[in-house]
Picture 1: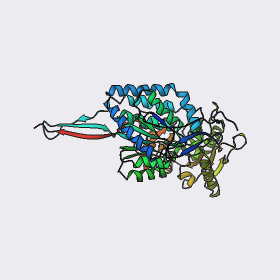
Picture 2: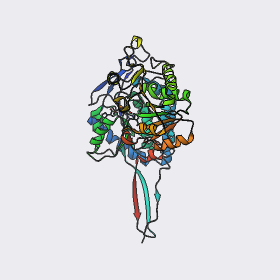
Picture 3: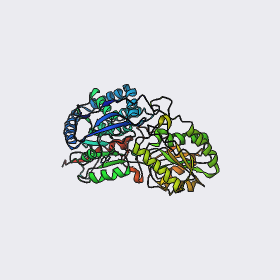
Picture 4: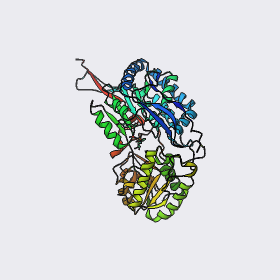
Length: 487
Ligand code: NAD
Protein backbone atom coordinates (compact mmCIF):
# COMPACT_ATOMS: atom_id res chain seq x y z
CA UNK A 1 0.00 0.00 0.00
CA UNK A 2 1.17 3.52 -0.71
CA UNK A 3 0.24 6.28 1.66
CA UNK A 4 1.05 9.93 1.68
CA UNK A 5 3.21 9.33 4.73
CA UNK A 6 5.33 6.53 3.27
CA UNK A 7 8.37 8.49 2.08
CA UNK A 8 11.34 8.88 4.44
CA UNK A 9 10.63 12.10 6.25
CA UNK A 10 13.85 13.33 7.67
CA UNK A 11 16.70 12.40 9.88
CA UNK A 12 16.02 13.49 13.40
CA UNK A 13 18.54 15.15 15.68
CA UNK A 14 18.68 15.66 19.41
CA UNK A 15 18.27 19.23 20.57
CA UNK A 16 20.78 20.23 23.26
CA UNK A 17 21.59 23.83 24.20
CA UNK A 18 19.87 25.11 21.07
CA UNK A 19 22.01 22.93 18.77
CA UNK A 20 20.99 19.94 16.68
CA UNK A 21 23.05 16.89 17.63
CA UNK A 22 22.85 14.14 15.05
CA UNK A 23 25.60 11.82 16.29
CA UNK A 24 24.86 10.37 19.71
CA UNK A 25 25.97 7.57 21.97
CA UNK A 26 22.61 5.78 22.27
CA UNK A 27 22.54 4.47 18.70
CA UNK A 28 19.77 5.15 16.18
CA UNK A 29 16.17 4.12 15.81
CA UNK A 30 14.71 3.30 12.40
CA UNK A 31 11.24 4.74 12.82
CA UNK A 32 8.38 2.83 11.18
CA UNK A 33 5.21 4.50 9.94
CA UNK A 34 2.39 2.32 11.32
CA UNK A 35 0.17 2.97 8.29
CA UNK A 36 2.38 0.96 5.94
CA UNK A 37 5.14 -0.67 7.99
CA UNK A 38 7.91 1.29 6.24
CA UNK A 39 10.73 3.34 7.70
CA UNK A 40 9.98 7.06 7.50
CA UNK A 41 12.70 8.55 9.72
CA UNK A 42 16.01 7.79 11.37
CA UNK A 43 16.16 9.01 14.94
CA UNK A 44 19.42 9.31 16.92
CA UNK A 45 18.98 8.23 20.52
CA UNK A 46 20.50 9.86 23.56
CA UNK A 47 22.87 7.95 25.79
CA UNK A 48 24.60 8.92 29.02
CA UNK A 49 26.95 11.51 27.51
CA UNK A 50 24.09 13.40 25.83
CA UNK A 51 22.15 13.35 29.11
CA UNK A 52 25.21 14.84 30.87
CA UNK A 53 25.53 17.59 28.24
CA UNK A 54 21.80 18.34 28.39
CA UNK A 55 21.84 18.60 32.20
CA UNK A 56 24.74 21.11 32.07
CA UNK A 57 23.05 23.22 29.42
CA UNK A 58 19.69 23.07 31.19
CA UNK A 59 21.17 24.38 34.45
CA UNK A 60 22.70 27.31 32.54
CA UNK A 61 19.34 27.99 30.89
CA UNK A 62 17.50 27.71 34.21
CA UNK A 63 19.77 30.40 35.71
CA UNK A 64 19.12 32.62 32.70
CA UNK A 65 15.35 31.95 32.80
CA UNK A 66 15.02 32.82 36.48
CA UNK A 67 17.06 35.99 35.97
CA UNK A 68 14.28 37.31 33.70
CA UNK A 69 11.48 39.35 35.28
CA UNK A 70 8.36 37.20 35.65
CA UNK A 71 6.35 39.23 33.14
CA UNK A 72 9.03 38.57 30.52
CA UNK A 73 8.79 34.83 31.21
CA UNK A 74 5.01 35.04 30.91
CA UNK A 75 5.28 36.88 27.57
CA UNK A 76 7.79 34.37 26.19
CA UNK A 77 5.48 31.47 27.11
CA UNK A 78 2.66 33.32 25.33
CA UNK A 79 4.98 33.69 22.29
CA UNK A 80 5.53 29.96 22.42
CA UNK A 81 1.76 29.35 22.53
CA UNK A 82 1.43 31.56 19.43
CA UNK A 83 4.19 29.61 17.66
CA UNK A 84 2.44 26.31 18.47
CA UNK A 85 -0.85 27.74 17.16
CA UNK A 86 0.84 28.93 13.95
CA UNK A 87 2.32 25.45 13.34
CA UNK A 88 -0.89 23.53 14.00
CA UNK A 89 -0.93 21.78 10.61
CA UNK A 90 2.73 20.79 10.75
CA UNK A 91 2.45 19.47 14.33
CA UNK A 92 -0.71 17.55 13.48
CA UNK A 93 0.97 15.90 10.49
CA UNK A 94 3.98 15.01 12.62
CA UNK A 95 1.62 13.23 15.04
CA UNK A 96 0.40 11.16 12.08
CA UNK A 97 3.95 10.36 10.96
CA UNK A 98 4.98 9.62 14.53
CA UNK A 99 2.35 7.11 15.60
CA UNK A 100 -0.30 6.80 12.89
CA UNK A 101 -3.04 8.79 14.65
CA UNK A 102 -5.74 9.64 12.08
CA UNK A 103 -5.29 13.24 11.01
CA UNK A 104 -8.95 13.89 11.88
CA UNK A 105 -8.11 13.37 15.57
CA UNK A 106 -4.37 14.16 15.69
CA UNK A 107 -4.63 17.91 16.35
CA UNK A 108 -3.25 17.54 19.86
CA UNK A 109 -1.26 20.77 19.60
CA UNK A 110 -4.47 22.66 20.35
CA UNK A 111 -4.09 21.27 23.87
CA UNK A 112 -0.37 22.12 23.95
CA UNK A 113 -1.30 25.71 23.13
CA UNK A 114 -4.12 25.83 25.70
CA UNK A 115 -1.86 24.52 28.47
CA UNK A 116 0.87 27.02 27.52
CA UNK A 117 -1.55 29.96 27.68
CA UNK A 118 -3.07 28.74 30.95
CA UNK A 119 0.28 28.24 32.70
CA UNK A 120 1.84 31.39 31.17
CA UNK A 121 -0.78 33.19 33.25
CA UNK A 122 0.71 31.60 36.37
CA UNK A 123 4.30 32.67 35.59
CA UNK A 124 3.77 35.92 37.50
CA UNK A 125 1.28 34.51 40.02
CA UNK A 126 3.00 31.39 41.41
CA UNK A 127 3.75 33.20 44.64
CA UNK A 128 3.99 32.03 48.22
CA UNK A 129 2.48 33.55 51.33
CA UNK A 130 3.33 34.66 54.83
CA UNK A 131 1.90 33.55 58.14
CA UNK A 132 1.91 34.75 61.76
CA UNK A 133 4.10 32.69 64.12
CA UNK A 134 4.62 32.55 67.88
CA UNK A 135 7.28 35.26 67.93
CA UNK A 136 4.96 38.23 67.76
CA UNK A 137 7.11 40.38 65.48
CA UNK A 138 8.90 37.62 63.54
CA UNK A 139 8.35 37.45 59.79
CA UNK A 140 7.53 33.99 58.44
CA UNK A 141 7.56 33.67 54.65
CA UNK A 142 6.50 30.61 52.67
CA UNK A 143 8.17 30.63 49.25
CA UNK A 144 7.64 28.40 46.26
CA UNK A 145 10.75 27.68 44.25
CA UNK A 146 11.45 25.68 41.10
CA UNK A 147 13.43 22.42 41.26
CA UNK A 148 15.92 23.76 38.69
CA UNK A 149 16.12 21.08 35.99
CA UNK A 150 13.33 18.53 35.64
CA UNK A 151 13.06 15.50 33.36
CA UNK A 152 9.79 14.94 31.48
CA UNK A 153 9.45 11.42 30.08
CA UNK A 154 6.65 11.16 27.52
CA UNK A 155 4.84 8.15 26.02
CA UNK A 156 4.44 7.69 22.27
CA UNK A 157 0.64 7.98 22.21
CA UNK A 158 0.28 11.71 22.88
CA UNK A 159 3.57 13.52 23.32
CA UNK A 160 2.11 16.92 22.45
CA UNK A 161 -0.53 16.53 25.16
CA UNK A 162 2.15 15.62 27.71
CA UNK A 163 4.23 18.57 26.56
CA UNK A 164 1.30 20.85 27.34
CA UNK A 165 0.43 19.14 30.60
CA UNK A 166 3.98 18.84 31.98
CA UNK A 167 6.45 21.06 30.11
CA UNK A 168 4.22 24.17 30.24
CA UNK A 169 3.79 24.19 34.06
CA UNK A 170 7.43 23.22 34.59
CA UNK A 171 8.56 26.28 32.63
CA UNK A 172 5.99 28.58 34.22
CA UNK A 173 7.30 27.48 37.62
CA UNK A 174 10.82 28.54 36.58
CA UNK A 175 12.40 25.19 35.72
CA UNK A 176 14.36 24.10 32.68
CA UNK A 177 13.15 20.86 31.11
CA UNK A 178 14.85 17.88 29.57
CA UNK A 179 12.12 16.30 27.48
CA UNK A 180 12.60 12.62 26.71
CA UNK A 181 10.07 11.48 24.14
CA UNK A 182 9.63 7.86 23.17
CA UNK A 183 11.71 6.72 20.23
CA UNK A 184 8.35 5.74 18.69
CA UNK A 185 7.14 9.35 18.62
CA UNK A 186 9.84 12.00 18.69
CA UNK A 187 9.34 14.05 15.50
CA UNK A 188 6.58 16.21 17.04
CA UNK A 189 8.52 16.80 20.30
CA UNK A 190 11.69 17.71 18.37
CA UNK A 191 9.76 20.27 16.35
CA UNK A 192 8.30 21.64 19.59
CA UNK A 193 11.87 22.06 20.87
CA UNK A 194 12.71 24.09 17.77
CA UNK A 195 9.62 26.25 18.29
CA UNK A 196 10.82 27.03 21.82
CA UNK A 197 13.95 28.55 20.30
CA UNK A 198 12.00 30.37 17.59
CA UNK A 199 9.72 31.85 20.27
CA UNK A 200 12.74 33.32 22.09
CA UNK A 201 13.16 30.92 25.03
CA UNK A 202 16.81 30.61 26.13
CA UNK A 203 18.74 27.80 24.38
CA UNK A 204 18.76 24.75 26.63
CA UNK A 205 15.60 25.72 28.51
CA UNK A 206 13.87 22.86 26.67
CA UNK A 207 16.33 20.18 25.58
CA UNK A 208 14.80 17.31 23.62
CA UNK A 209 16.42 13.90 23.89
CA UNK A 210 14.67 11.01 22.13
CA UNK A 211 15.85 7.86 23.83
CA UNK A 212 14.97 4.30 24.60
CA UNK A 213 15.06 2.66 28.04
CA UNK A 214 18.84 3.16 28.50
CA UNK A 215 18.71 6.90 27.85
CA UNK A 216 15.62 7.12 30.04
CA UNK A 217 17.44 5.38 32.90
CA UNK A 218 20.45 7.71 32.50
CA UNK A 219 18.12 10.71 32.82
CA UNK A 220 16.28 9.38 35.88
CA UNK A 221 19.53 8.38 37.65
CA UNK A 222 21.24 11.69 36.99
CA UNK A 223 22.12 13.31 40.34
CA UNK A 224 21.41 16.86 39.11
CA UNK A 225 17.83 16.23 38.00
CA UNK A 226 15.46 17.81 40.52
CA UNK A 227 12.30 15.90 39.65
CA UNK A 228 11.02 13.38 37.11
CA UNK A 229 7.61 13.69 35.52
CA UNK A 230 6.85 10.28 34.00
CA UNK A 231 3.91 9.36 31.77
CA UNK A 232 3.73 5.77 30.56
CA UNK A 233 2.88 2.24 31.59
CA UNK A 234 2.96 0.61 35.04
CA UNK A 235 5.88 -1.75 34.30
CA UNK A 236 8.09 1.12 33.12
CA UNK A 237 7.00 3.23 36.09
CA UNK A 238 8.36 0.56 38.45
CA UNK A 239 11.76 0.76 36.70
CA UNK A 240 11.67 4.56 36.83
CA UNK A 241 10.87 4.52 40.56
CA UNK A 242 13.71 2.06 41.21
CA UNK A 243 16.16 4.25 39.27
CA UNK A 244 14.88 7.40 40.98
CA UNK A 245 15.57 5.77 44.33
CA UNK A 246 19.32 6.04 43.55
CA UNK A 247 19.26 9.75 44.36
CA UNK A 248 15.85 9.86 46.06
CA UNK A 249 14.61 11.95 43.13
CA UNK A 250 10.90 12.74 43.45
CA UNK A 251 8.64 11.37 40.70
CA UNK A 252 5.20 12.17 39.32
CA UNK A 253 3.66 9.10 37.69
CA UNK A 254 0.83 9.43 35.15
CA UNK A 255 0.01 5.84 34.21
CA UNK A 256 -2.48 3.67 32.37
CA UNK A 257 -6.05 2.71 33.11
CA UNK A 258 -8.85 0.23 32.57
CA UNK A 259 -11.64 2.73 32.68
CA UNK A 260 -15.26 1.74 33.20
CA UNK A 261 -17.97 3.33 31.07
CA UNK A 262 -21.28 2.97 32.96
CA UNK A 263 -24.52 3.05 30.93
CA UNK A 264 -27.61 3.25 33.13
CA UNK A 265 -31.05 2.34 31.80
CA UNK A 266 -32.16 5.98 32.00
CA UNK A 267 -29.32 7.19 29.74
CA UNK A 268 -29.68 8.48 26.19
CA UNK A 269 -28.65 5.22 24.52
CA UNK A 270 -27.85 6.75 21.13
CA UNK A 271 -25.48 9.30 22.66
CA UNK A 272 -24.03 6.66 25.00
CA UNK A 273 -23.29 4.30 22.10
CA UNK A 274 -21.64 7.05 20.06
CA UNK A 275 -19.46 8.22 22.96
CA UNK A 276 -18.58 4.65 23.96
CA UNK A 277 -17.55 3.78 20.39
CA UNK A 278 -15.35 6.82 19.99
CA UNK A 279 -13.96 6.77 23.53
CA UNK A 280 -13.49 3.00 23.47
CA UNK A 281 -12.09 1.13 20.48
CA UNK A 282 -12.13 3.92 17.86
CA UNK A 283 -10.10 6.92 19.01
CA UNK A 284 -6.41 6.23 18.36
CA UNK A 285 -7.46 2.58 17.91
CA UNK A 286 -7.98 2.30 21.68
CA UNK A 287 -4.47 3.58 22.39
CA UNK A 288 -5.37 6.30 24.84
CA UNK A 289 -4.86 6.35 28.60
CA UNK A 290 -8.43 7.64 28.93
CA UNK A 291 -9.79 4.80 26.79
CA UNK A 292 -13.17 3.42 27.94
CA UNK A 293 -12.15 -0.20 27.68
CA UNK A 294 -14.76 -1.73 30.02
CA UNK A 295 -18.30 -0.87 28.98
CA UNK A 296 -20.74 -1.69 31.82
CA UNK A 297 -24.40 -1.67 30.76
CA UNK A 298 -27.53 -2.06 32.90
CA UNK A 299 -28.97 -5.46 32.05
CA UNK A 300 -32.43 -4.14 31.09
CA UNK A 301 -30.95 -2.12 28.16
CA UNK A 302 -27.96 -4.35 27.39
CA UNK A 303 -29.26 -5.71 24.05
CA UNK A 304 -30.61 -2.35 22.87
CA UNK A 305 -27.31 -0.64 23.75
CA UNK A 306 -25.20 -3.36 22.14
CA UNK A 307 -27.01 -2.99 18.78
CA UNK A 308 -26.36 0.76 18.77
CA UNK A 309 -22.79 0.37 20.02
CA UNK A 310 -21.85 -2.12 17.29
CA UNK A 311 -23.45 0.14 14.65
CA UNK A 312 -21.52 3.17 15.95
CA UNK A 313 -18.23 1.23 15.89
CA UNK A 314 -18.90 0.03 12.33
CA UNK A 315 -19.65 3.60 11.20
CA UNK A 316 -16.03 4.71 11.74
CA UNK A 317 -14.13 4.75 8.45
CA UNK A 318 -10.94 2.66 8.57
CA UNK A 319 -7.88 3.49 6.48
CA UNK A 320 -4.78 5.58 5.85
CA UNK A 321 -4.48 8.04 8.76
CA UNK A 322 -3.55 10.85 6.38
CA UNK A 323 -7.02 10.75 4.76
CA UNK A 324 -9.22 13.42 6.37
CA UNK A 325 -12.37 11.25 6.64
CA UNK A 326 -10.61 8.30 8.29
CA UNK A 327 -11.49 7.86 11.97
CA UNK A 328 -9.79 4.55 12.72
CA UNK A 329 -6.13 3.90 11.96
CA UNK A 330 -3.40 1.43 12.80
CA UNK A 331 -1.91 0.49 16.15
CA UNK A 332 1.61 1.71 16.74
CA UNK A 333 3.88 -1.23 15.88
CA UNK A 334 4.29 -4.87 14.99
CA UNK A 335 4.91 -5.64 18.68
CA UNK A 336 1.64 -3.94 19.65
CA UNK A 337 -0.19 -5.85 16.89
CA UNK A 338 1.14 -9.18 18.14
CA UNK A 339 0.36 -8.34 21.78
CA UNK A 340 -3.24 -7.24 21.06
CA UNK A 341 -3.95 -10.28 18.85
CA UNK A 342 -2.63 -12.53 21.66
CA UNK A 343 -5.09 -10.91 24.10
CA UNK A 344 -7.95 -11.51 21.63
CA UNK A 345 -6.90 -15.15 21.16
CA UNK A 346 -6.62 -15.71 24.92
CA UNK A 347 -10.09 -14.22 25.50
CA UNK A 348 -11.50 -16.61 22.89
CA UNK A 349 -9.66 -19.69 24.13
CA UNK A 350 -10.52 -18.99 27.78
CA UNK A 351 -14.17 -18.27 26.81
CA UNK A 352 -13.90 -15.08 28.81
CA UNK A 353 -16.37 -13.29 26.53
CA UNK A 354 -18.46 -13.61 23.36
CA UNK A 355 -16.87 -12.17 20.23
CA UNK A 356 -19.47 -9.79 18.77
CA UNK A 357 -17.40 -8.22 15.99
CA UNK A 358 -13.78 -7.91 14.84
CA UNK A 359 -10.90 -9.94 16.21
CA UNK A 360 -8.60 -10.02 13.17
CA UNK A 361 -5.74 -8.16 11.58
CA UNK A 362 -6.90 -6.35 8.46
CA UNK A 363 -5.56 -7.46 5.08
CA UNK A 364 -5.96 -6.23 1.51
CA UNK A 365 -4.74 -2.69 0.96
CA UNK A 366 -4.04 -2.36 4.68
CA UNK A 367 -2.03 -5.58 5.07
CA UNK A 368 1.36 -3.82 5.32
CA UNK A 369 0.20 -1.54 8.12
CA UNK A 370 -0.65 -2.48 11.71
CA UNK A 371 -4.43 -2.52 11.45
CA UNK A 372 -6.59 -4.61 13.78
CA UNK A 373 -10.36 -4.63 13.32
CA UNK A 374 -12.31 -2.72 15.98
CA UNK A 375 -13.24 -5.59 18.28
CA UNK A 376 -16.10 -6.00 20.75
CA UNK A 377 -16.50 -8.80 23.28
CA UNK A 378 -19.85 -9.14 25.07
CA UNK A 379 -20.73 -10.68 28.46
CA UNK A 380 -17.07 -10.45 29.50
CA UNK A 381 -15.94 -11.94 32.80
CA UNK A 382 -14.58 -9.02 34.86
CA UNK A 383 -11.91 -11.30 36.33
CA UNK A 384 -10.50 -12.13 32.87
CA UNK A 385 -7.20 -10.77 31.61
CA UNK A 386 -9.13 -8.77 28.99
CA UNK A 387 -11.08 -6.96 31.72
CA UNK A 388 -8.24 -6.56 34.20
CA UNK A 389 -5.21 -5.53 32.09
CA UNK A 390 -4.74 -2.42 29.99
CA UNK A 391 -5.06 -3.70 26.40
CA UNK A 392 -4.05 -0.43 24.69
CA UNK A 393 -5.72 -1.51 21.48
CA UNK A 394 -9.13 -1.46 19.76
CA UNK A 395 -10.79 -4.05 21.96
CA UNK A 396 -13.88 -3.26 24.05
CA UNK A 397 -15.08 -5.52 26.87
CA UNK A 398 -18.82 -5.14 27.46
CA UNK A 399 -20.56 -6.59 30.51
CA UNK A 400 -24.00 -6.24 32.13
CA UNK A 401 -24.74 -4.98 35.64
CA UNK A 402 -27.89 -5.36 37.71
CA UNK A 403 -28.19 -2.11 39.65
CA UNK A 404 -26.26 0.91 40.93
CA UNK A 405 -24.44 -1.02 43.65
CA UNK A 406 -23.42 -3.74 41.18
CA UNK A 407 -22.18 -1.10 38.71
CA UNK A 408 -19.99 0.56 41.36
CA UNK A 409 -18.64 -2.80 42.54
CA UNK A 410 -17.68 -3.86 39.00
CA UNK A 411 -16.24 -0.48 38.06
CA UNK A 412 -13.98 -0.43 41.14
CA UNK A 413 -12.96 -4.08 40.78
CA UNK A 414 -9.64 -3.26 39.09
CA UNK A 415 -6.17 -2.25 40.24
CA UNK A 416 -6.38 0.86 38.03
CA UNK A 417 -8.13 4.14 38.80
CA UNK A 418 -7.54 6.69 36.06
CA UNK A 419 -10.99 7.57 34.68
CA UNK A 420 -14.60 6.52 34.73
CA UNK A 421 -17.59 7.53 32.64
CA UNK A 422 -21.25 7.72 33.70
CA UNK A 423 -24.14 7.87 31.26
CA UNK A 424 -27.41 8.74 33.01
CA UNK A 425 -30.18 11.33 32.89
CA UNK A 426 -30.48 11.26 36.69
CA UNK A 427 -28.37 14.04 38.23
CA UNK A 428 -28.65 12.63 41.75
CA UNK A 429 -27.39 9.25 40.56
CA UNK A 430 -24.55 10.92 38.62
CA UNK A 431 -23.33 12.67 41.79
CA UNK A 432 -23.72 9.68 44.03
CA UNK A 433 -22.06 7.17 41.68
CA UNK A 434 -19.21 9.62 40.87
CA UNK A 435 -18.42 9.91 44.59
CA UNK A 436 -18.22 6.13 44.95
CA UNK A 437 -15.94 5.52 41.95
CA UNK A 438 -12.22 5.08 42.70
CA UNK A 439 -10.83 7.14 39.82
CA UNK A 440 -9.11 10.50 39.40
CA UNK A 441 -11.42 11.78 36.65
CA UNK A 442 -15.12 11.15 36.15
CA UNK A 443 -16.93 12.25 33.02
CA UNK A 444 -20.73 12.36 33.10
CA UNK A 445 -22.51 12.25 29.72
CA UNK A 446 -19.40 13.27 27.81
CA UNK A 447 -16.06 12.32 26.35
CA UNK A 448 -12.80 12.60 28.25
CA UNK A 449 -12.18 16.23 27.39
CA UNK A 450 -8.92 17.12 29.06
CA UNK A 451 -8.54 20.85 29.71
CA UNK A 452 -5.76 22.75 31.49
CA UNK A 453 -8.09 23.96 34.26
CA UNK A 454 -8.94 20.47 35.54
CA UNK A 455 -6.42 18.37 37.51
CA UNK A 456 -5.87 14.98 35.85
CA UNK A 457 -4.22 11.88 37.28
CA UNK A 458 -4.76 8.47 38.76
CA UNK A 459 -6.04 6.69 41.83
CA UNK A 460 -4.59 3.29 42.81
CA UNK A 461 -2.06 1.91 40.28
CA UNK A 462 -2.89 4.57 37.69
CA UNK A 463 -0.31 6.77 39.34
CA UNK A 464 0.18 9.75 41.60
CA UNK A 465 0.52 13.47 41.06
CA UNK A 466 -1.66 15.64 38.85
CA UNK A 467 -1.39 17.54 35.59
CA UNK A 468 -3.56 20.59 35.02
CA UNK A 469 -4.87 23.22 37.40
CA UNK A 470 -2.91 24.72 40.29
CA UNK A 471 -2.16 21.12 41.35
CA UNK A 472 -0.23 20.61 38.10
CA UNK A 473 1.82 23.76 38.73
CA UNK A 474 2.64 22.76 42.30
CA UNK A 475 4.19 19.50 41.04
CA UNK A 476 7.04 21.67 39.73
CA UNK A 477 7.52 23.88 42.80
CA UNK A 478 9.08 23.07 46.15
CA UNK A 479 8.17 24.91 49.31
CA UNK A 480 10.63 26.84 51.47
CA UNK A 481 9.81 28.39 54.84
CA UNK A 482 11.91 31.42 55.85
CA UNK A 483 11.55 32.80 59.40
CA UNK A 484 13.17 36.09 60.25
CA UNK A 485 13.63 36.81 63.93
CA UNK A 486 12.70 40.39 64.77
CA UNK A 487 13.23 40.47 68.51
P1 NAD B 1 6.08 3.07 28.20
O1 NAD B 1 5.93 2.87 29.65
O2 NAD B 1 6.53 1.92 27.37
O3 NAD B 1 7.12 4.26 27.88
C1 NAD B 1 6.91 5.55 28.40
C2 NAD B 1 8.21 6.33 28.29
O4 NAD B 1 9.18 5.74 29.14
C3 NAD B 1 8.83 6.33 26.89
O5 NAD B 1 9.44 7.57 26.64
C4 NAD B 1 9.89 5.25 27.00
O6 NAD B 1 10.96 5.40 26.08
C5 NAD B 1 10.38 5.49 28.42
N1 NAD B 1 11.06 4.34 29.02
C6 NAD B 1 10.95 3.03 28.69
N2 NAD B 1 11.70 2.29 29.52
C7 NAD B 1 12.29 3.15 30.40
C8 NAD B 1 13.16 2.98 31.50
N3 NAD B 1 13.60 1.76 31.88
N4 NAD B 1 13.56 4.08 32.19
C9 NAD B 1 13.11 5.32 31.83
N5 NAD B 1 12.28 5.52 30.79
C10 NAD B 1 11.87 4.45 30.08
O7 NAD B 1 4.66 3.61 27.69
P2 NAD B 1 4.21 3.87 26.20
O8 NAD B 1 3.95 2.57 25.52
O9 NAD B 1 5.13 4.84 25.56
O10 NAD B 1 2.84 4.65 26.47
C11 NAD B 1 1.64 4.00 26.75
C12 NAD B 1 1.34 4.01 28.23
O11 NAD B 1 1.28 5.36 28.73
C13 NAD B 1 -0.03 3.42 28.52
O12 NAD B 1 0.02 2.65 29.69
C14 NAD B 1 -0.90 4.66 28.71
O13 NAD B 1 -2.07 4.43 29.44
C15 NAD B 1 0.05 5.56 29.43
N6 NAD B 1 -0.36 6.97 29.34
C16 NAD B 1 -0.81 7.59 30.47
C17 NAD B 1 -1.25 8.91 30.41
C18 NAD B 1 -1.78 9.63 31.63
O14 NAD B 1 -1.90 10.85 31.59
N7 NAD B 1 -2.09 8.94 32.71
C19 NAD B 1 -1.20 9.60 29.19
C20 NAD B 1 -0.73 8.92 28.07
C21 NAD B 1 -0.30 7.61 28.15
